[in-house]
Image (tube, rainbow, N blue to C red):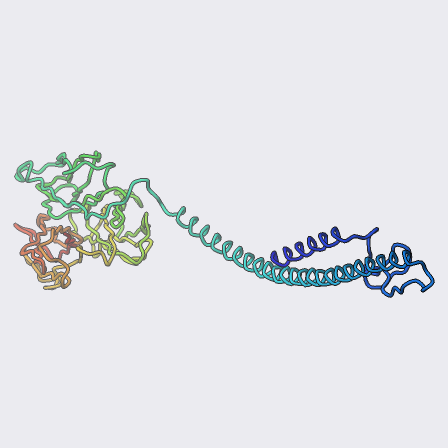
Length: 425
């Protein structure tokens, strides 16, 4: 289009030059250029000499004038032809410019349509992004990066700080973390050993107090207790995989009221992509001293957002209160596994024995070296005609598996007992 307009401008300049160079007495019109003129000052195309009787001098002057007029007329005819050619070029240039403008208009229409479609797609993308932002804002966040390191595990036994020959109600110890945390960690605690003396009730409780960034107090209380042992996990604040908590029946009713079944729906602070593994340990119980001691804890209905925790008794037992700790972690997480077992896996409850053991096999290729293992009690069924004594241990631990051991001693009658283990690198 620009080339056509430039050509037209050059043609107009040529016309101006031609007109400027023509020796005419007044402006010429297109009619002047296309027909002969005969009046004064006009071009004559057919001039004849004066009659023979004219003087010689007059004839010579007339002949000269006629020649000049003929020359001027020929020049003007040539100029007219050039004007016609230049006019045709201008017309052609304008037509090409019009054609280019038409094509440009079509291109603008297509571009406008494409821009409109792009705008609509951007609006859709913005809407989806806003929905995602709202969903992310609705989830708990933290300014600190989340840890992926496996938890620290450890244990405590009252026999490490006092003898078990004299029962006491309260035993505690201050524990310093191997490393200081930026904030107090989450902790899950469970019983692995107990030797409860006869009292008004049969009661034992393991719990954490005075939790700080660098230390805490571990406690085992009872009514009274000859000895007791507990295990725990330290979970860094805002760990992206592990979550834990504690449920007590005292949240639902006072200890003076005995109930057989208790359950609570637990919601995860951070939902998982798929239902996680959930580990449950007993951490406390308080039962009638003159009725068989039966209690168990377990999880059910595990989803990506939570699960139901249960604490139950059965038969004629009276459970005044109990508490359990829970731990959740991704089902497909590498270098960790967990599971539960019971004496009833290898014998019936009505065939009580002081010592019962059984095997645990880890998943194939789960561990390349021997993992760390922590075990906690999740159930027991013992007679009330003697003392309540139980200890859970893991032996022969290797990368392939281990052996669990549930042992009682002296006059304890242990009908059944169960535990839950966590093995991790």
